[in-house]
Structures are given as C-alpha cells and as structure tokens.
Length: 267
Image (cartoon, rainbow, N blue to C red):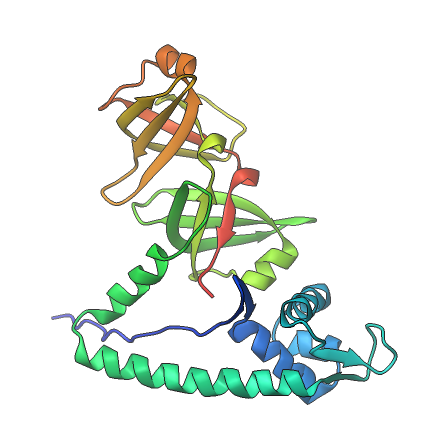
C-alpha cells in the first residue's frame, strides 16, 4: 500500500511600484546580503547571483524606488557598499508582510480543501502578457553553453520545449532542474507543418491535432491541441493554411525556434 505525501500551501510576496515589480524574495535577499557583507561581490555570491545580475537588480530597484537604495563609498561599483535608510525600511517592511502572508496561507490552507492547487492555478491565470501562448511545465535540463544556456522545459502532456537564454537570465530566474517555469511564445513565431518525419533545424517540434481554423482577410489563426490541457496558437497566412489543407481533426506539428521561446517564473 502506498501513501500519498501531504500537500503544502506555498506562495510568495513581492512589492510593486506602479505597474512594475520593485522587489521579491530574491531582490530583498540581495539587499539583506549587501547590508550584512558591505560588498556587492560578496552579496551576489551569497545569494547565488552573478555580479552583473546583482547590479542590474540594484539599478532596477533604485529606478523604481525613485531614490537610491544602495550606495558605495567611492560612488562607483567597488567596495564599501552600504544601504540607505530607505532600503533598510524596505527589508523590514517586506519581512513583516511576508510573515503575515505566511500566516494567511496557513490559515486558508487549513480551512479550504484543495486550496494549494487552486491558489497556484489562480496565480497563473492572473499573469498578463502579450504572448498568445503560455505553456506551463518543469525544467528538466539546463545545459550551459559558451555564451547562452539551453533550458529544457517538460510540458504537462509529456512533450518538451527548449529555449535559449543568457547565463544572466538563468541565474536571475533561478532556473534549475525540477523548478516550475512557463514558456511564452508569440503566435506569429509559431510555424506549422504536416505531421511527417522531416528533419528541421528548429529545436522545437510539438505534435498535436488541429482544433480550429479561423480565417481573416489575410491571415488565419490556427489552434493546435497538444494534449487534454495544452493548446498552442499559430498565426499563418491564408495561403499557407490552404496549402497545408489545415482543418479540424488534422494532425500537424508546431515548429518553434529555441530563440523564439521566452522563459518565465512566478516570483
């Protein structure tokens, strides 16, 4: 007889400045490490971030806060780094909110059956992006390259999609095997072809069944069902749709270059 592991409710807190994210757990941890070490280099190492990614994060926070949060004795990017009073308040405010947020999740998780799964789904549904295709999955492999990294994402239905991202993006997003992530792909970046064994240079070839074809004046919107829960949309010309003879029920392949896939995570 097997026993099922109990589910634990999880969540994260982030502070916003207007429509932009000022800081989440990663950025607040970086600020705290700067406070404790007095050095950007040491702080970046402590939180597992590159020196460049750390300064990019600091610059972003300074810009969004409308005031300096981190200062150096020389005015440059060297040693003697300290936090301003505003940054210290930001850390304490974040931690206070995070404590209350944790209490909230514990209370609601105990009161509502199945809340852990539903809460995660609500977060995904609330994400706003101009990319038509949003595919959720888990990172199955991270391959370091000379310039960029290859991120392999296992989709819910069993197929795999590969993205090429910079080293800095891999670190900033905390991408590693087993972590949750999602792929964003604009519909205009998706090419369609017949379901054959043709060899292509494009890394991603997702197989599915055409569920709908909607033609406009010039272009057609084609929905390709990959599995019970995943659909990918492509925008192609009417001429291409006619040439391929695309219709509901037909097998087809969505072809996507790895460089056209954007990887994101829920902070």
